[in-house]
Image 1 (cartoon, rainbow, N blue to C red):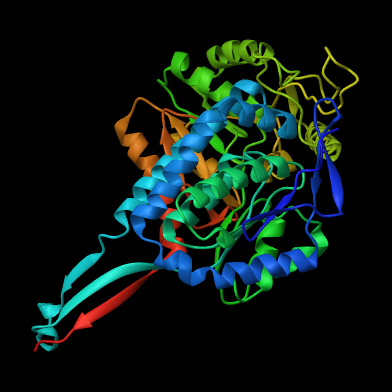
Image 2 (image 1 turned 120 degrees about the vertical axis):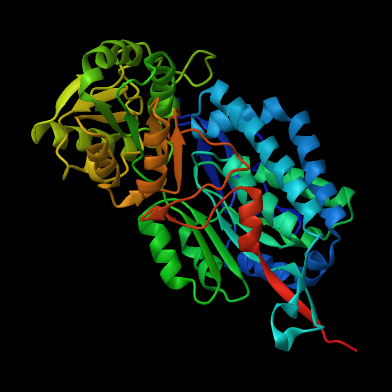
Amino acid sequence: MTDPIPIIVAGEQVTTPDVVPVRDPYTGGVVHEVCQADAAWVERAIAAADEARGAMSALPAHVRREVLLGCLRRIEQQAEALAQLCRAEAGKPITAARGEVARMMDTFRDAAEVAGGLASGEVLDLGVTASGAGYRGMVKRVPVGPCSLITPFNFPLNLVAHKVAPAIAAGCPFVVKPADTTPGCALALGRIVLESFVECNAPVAAVSVLPMPLEWVAPLVEDERFKLLSFTGSAKVGWDLKARAGKKKVVLELGGNAACVVDEGADLERALPKIVAGAFGFAGQSCISVQRLLVHASLIDAFLERFLRDVEAVVVGDPAAEYTVAGPVIKDDAAQRIRVWINEAVDAGAEVLAGENCTPDRNDPTNTRLLRPTVLRHVPHDAKLWTDEVFGPVVALETYEDFEDAMRLVNDSAWGLQAGVFTPSLDRALRAWDALEVGGVLINEAPTWRADPMPYGGVKASGFGREGARYAVDDMTEPRLCVIAPS
């Protein structure tokens, strides 16, 4: 066993006596040990972030850009090692883990472009009113200050990048609290960021990455020295954090139960591979995984024949294998909860069309975290599989006759992150964009699709605020006006 991975406190790597093992969710073996922060280290990180506020704010935009490009170069150099780390900690199939690293590079590249444009500002002609005649206004965006960034396990590299890279672009110090199951990924990225800060003579005290027990998390939420809290995770936790956050800005990305509509005339050759990948890739552990599948009645027979064949062909197993699509879910209790929800739906009248009705994978019956991709029909609309986020490889299938009924079914949810609509009709595509109560409507694409520069986030129980560097920087900065009176 190698030495424990140190935490990062105010730009320093620190070995602490509190050490925990991080386990591979597929094998159960120990990947490595990671040091943990305690209350004193948390306070030191917050104080350092507060002290670094001025230095980060004063950092010229071109230096912020160079820091981000330096991170990008290092990620490119370490791409395979980062992918293998993601595979080991999160149980993510290696091909998907490599894809996540590629997306993380896109995130830093996008943030570098945003940082380069922040210096442009805006000039206002205030003479549009009589009282403003002769006055000139100028607006620039200034960093809000220290940011508290709390990240999830399912994209342990790119979702950390989606918070850290915009913070650097905006000129904000930050403290990252990574998921307890994937801290090594966040610390690996933290070391990359530190190296780039040193190379560019940026203030390293602005950087902290703190794995920690839950008992020490409260200051990251409640301390008034933080000016923004950005959280990605469960709705129950997220809304509680918002209630405790005080006057600081809060950005929440809280998941969903994404719907996908397959309308009459849809191109099934195009739709089916996207739906299968969107439902079962990484064992459905994405907040925009296809969960509710709405198929026009005229297509259902042809759709099911091919869909169920493709579902059966999904490879479930070892994330290290190049051909694996769905590895394990992250924890035993997650697997147990998913099985309970499936059984509850079946007991209430749902029909299992694919899957093994909650038994472990037939090829590896000893690994209870492996679940066969499961498709159910006639799931009651008050069942958890319909109303809540399953976060597993499970689809609830429904048919509809009228497009307006499909829109109603999509909106029949407390959640509103993304929805997909496969349709050949431009009118219906635009109708979906108008009608669906979600943060993003994807036409002829599964709701699971995401390009990293786009504004990504939800409404209703799915939270508020948007990721994507341009939009995250808007949250991490605020406009500051200068007015010049006529002489």
